[in-house]
Length: 251
Image 1 (cartoon, rainbow, N blue to C red):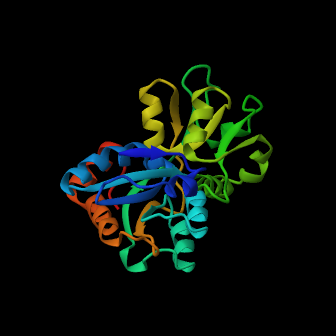
Image 2: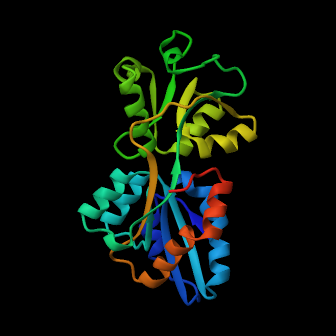
């Protein structure tokens, strides 16, 4: 299993492939990084000759890459809105689309030297100078964050404090390194950092829109059968066990 960054995707995929009989590329939301890396060898073991490689980034960035012709076989988004856009542009095989996990939004602060935040209202206090949020145009966690803060009447008030992040993992890094006072991430991402004593969860605000992840075969995939097999494995009992172990909920 190999993993590569989002930026050089088109160039990287233009390089000669290995001798594997089939190789599929899965573009997946950054929050799926750890779980999918564990899933890959299990899938490959059941499909001799098939290799999976990943491209992890914000869902909106992945969609842009696919729309620009990046050779991708499977797309997994952290929200329905991005996948809806992919369907509207006919970039996915609509019949292959499945919801495969759920997640939830949490508010975090650094584990050491935090401001003692206990809820959303505390973010408006003078002690909180910087709040990391995902970019709403491309990062689903940013849109979930905006929905929660807008419902609380805080989005416009807090906007001067926002530090824009390119992915949920970048939000997590900003908070974990103490570069910001707080941030909004998924519970699955926070769990890893909490275990490493880098951040702590201080609130679990509920967004009106459920945090639901869809997955689909990309319309221009050259390996649609293998792509469909990967999606089936993700939704299988063994695949769901791995995802649950990483904190994801059932679809």
